[in-house]
Length: 426
Ligand SMILES: Cc1cc2nc3c(=O)[nH]c(=O)nc-3n(C[C@H](O)[C@H](O)[C@H](O)COP(=O)(O)OP(=O)(O)OC[C@H]3O[C@@H](n4cnc5c(N)ncnc54)[C@H](O)[C@@H]3O)c2cc1C
Image (cartoon, rainbow, N blue to C red; front, side):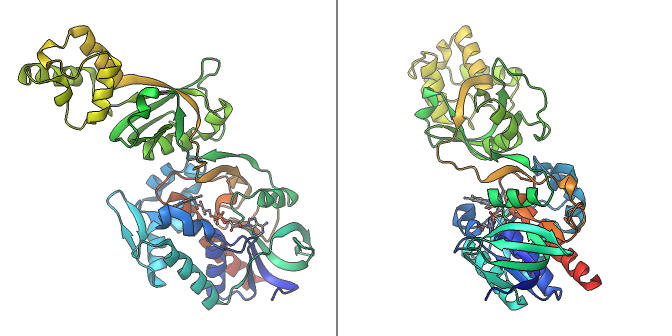
């Protein structure tokens, strides 16, 4: 049943909204109502992490943690000092959901099913007395008499003492925030793979390499001055990449596009990507690898012996072909000029970036309500008392690995706690 009056209305039944609602209700706040526009609350949690839900990341130190947020960054130090990754692990464990860590630091539910996280959040909300109403969208919000007059899609109206906007990246949340006096940093996609005009790479689809160095070079009519909203060091990344049918993906590519999200948008998703396939080996080190191979493997064919073992065999063959060198040629016969060209390609191959990856696989949106417009300890609006924000509606986004959910848990928990304190004083 939808009441006419409620103590707390949370708009958005995603992870941030659930965390805020559960925390407030568990702390004793009565009359917490979640309105979810769709028929499927927590839908993104269900499809996240390839169906396994990467809940958070084993990055325990807030000062290190903030480095994984291109938007948010140091402004998140205060919030993370109150509730960070270890608190998330403990919060879920205390409520019957244990998380397990993978070798790369990502934390998943021990069932390895995102449905366990959805079920836990729904069970906790219900146990705490949270009223969840699906297929109910908040359409208008107006501050009135120390509370909020809220208009629903379909015409219903209800009053709430407190309002939490946890609407993710949906434009309706941005519209509501604007109507209540907030500015919106324009949304742009973050975390996407790159489409490259690189026929030589297409035949290598499926090859992974780690580490690889990536550097974005601006289009010739652009410059590399900092762009408002992008993080530091945004044009250079190093780590694992995956060669795809359309270009490049994998953690280092996603990290690069997250940190350069605004700049890439400004450039119309056109630039040059310089790839260091060696992951940072110096010219001297590479020359020494080649010298060793020429001397110790002199009679072997180039195609059957790579200059160092971590180099992908298929990539090496492709580079040989690109330089017109037969795989059957012996190492002893490799000429100086060709060796120099191969080393140059290994250290700095350049590919035109022609767009974003084709599957719309960007996982998050950069942009939203600026953190500067909120109290850093409560995420309450500085300008509108009783109005709170949590999750992706804010101008905060992280790289892949569980960091985006971590921001939802942190902001949701802070909002829930602040609501409880606020209602107690009221
Ligand atoms: C395919 C995919 C995989 C992902 N995997 C991971 C991962 O493994 N780890 C990770 O950390 N992050 C992951 N992410 C990112 C993560 O899902 C988001 O950062 C997170 O869901 C944001 O949570 P939120 O609660 O702020 O918003 P959302 O999850 O978007 O929830 C907002 C909710 O509000 C509702 N809503 C919107 N407007 C209104 C309105 N006016 N009235 C009522 N309801 C409204 C929406 O329907 C939605 O249910 C993934 C994202 C995608 C798309």
